[in-house]
Length: 120
Image (tube, rainbow, N blue to C red; front, side, top):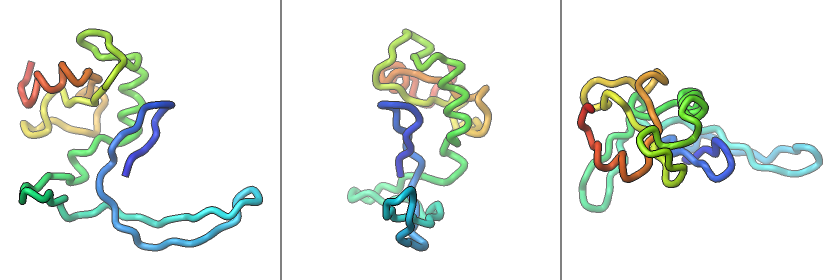
């Protein structure tokens, strides 16, 4: 599931299971509503690689919004506003948290991919 944070900025929030659905009247329109739960099972890819999508790795929307405002919607390394990623300063794989804006920054794809799981 993806969530729109601002115009042209979407964030991946994990895999969800559909629990219930219903049709509801909203401002004179019929809209579908869904009840979801975060999937506890890891996503398996066709290549038999398991991707960890546990809730602890995902950065909550409130943290993303705080980081976006703090970093001005730009890469903290080069100031680019294209192809942005939310990055753990202390990598999640090394014990970094997703629940604190102090451990999350915005990097462009080039800087995020070159950093990988290194601590700079």
